[in-house]
Length: 511
Image 1 (cartoon, one colour):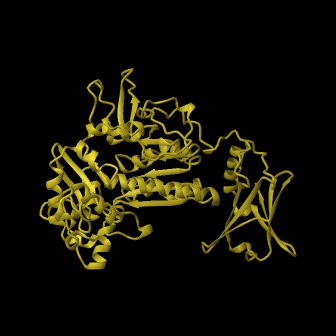
Image 2 (cartoon, one colour):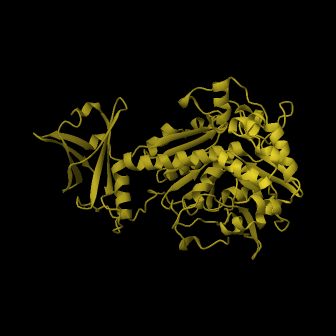
């Protein structure tokens, strides 16, 4: 898939702005998922840059070794600013950026951001709507104190401690790491989900969120089968090679020219497979007639299946089994590059090389697709390339040119009021009606049926107002309403007043 002009495309996450302080794999993967779909991701790097810039491999024509494959694969579609966060001026620069972003992502060891004065609590004072995403090996005390919280961690450590390595390989005496960095990739994917969920909530409540993924936790959740096996049967699962302890035939089998995967779960597929193989012994229902029997006799069954498959090539097995049962060839990366599925679904992206016109890098694409929205594949940034661009403080992720005078009408919009109490309980309801009062200051006045909440201003911690359209049809006010909602999210409780009448409570806010 060739890169296209960014300005001619629209991503589903357009309008989301992210500060990415992460490096290496887990955090950059999370922010790349967002950048691919239109989020504005600003990568904050040290003077030396993300260490993945130096990790290699490098193309032969990259004589200055500036463009590592590792870095290119994870940092496309991003912008770069180089800062030294030990210098006050650079920290101040970062804090100015924080005023106008939706998200900050970091994957430092716990305590680093606190020492820099950049904890979630501190950044929330600058931007109450900030979504703060953190990936670390073992998390922070916020969600449960880990005895390992100060241990540094990389993918192999999380795979080991989370149980994945104990389940991988042919026997328990020869543990085997999963090849790709699945702990990093899975943790990054989970964080991307958490960030988007939190942005959605922040835009309706005006309150930010701390989102945390511990890599150890992520791998435990990935190994879900081992958890219930131990609970149900008091069995400590062990490596099964390419098989499955509860299913058969299920695993990797020989072909003349390589290997294939077969995964039989339902009895329906077993019936189809045994008819194709057409060996009388496989029709023995006393051995193979149910899922439980096939699992019990899985070693003998897998041996019979393997004897049959190795008589055919991968292509021949594809003709026999493809589309009939769960089946697939074991592909090399060369096979993947040549597979029509990958070509048609744009899963190998081509990114132009900045130093050699006409040539491109090829990287793995984004598997998440959205109908009607594009994804991008622009080159990753030079180190510090965009600092001048962001030297003017960002007001918000919504254009600062939007009119301050926009006042939505009740026939088109409804207003949700969220009251957060000092005990952290929150009440949400839609106003019966709302009106605008314009004098020296602009006021929003919402009416609520009396009795919806206890009228005691001393119990209130914050009040947030959020306008949404009644009809999903676009009317050209989208940017104006986003800007207004951003203004409303910053209203201080000191500018909110409650007034009781006989039938309603009026909540007024000075904007």
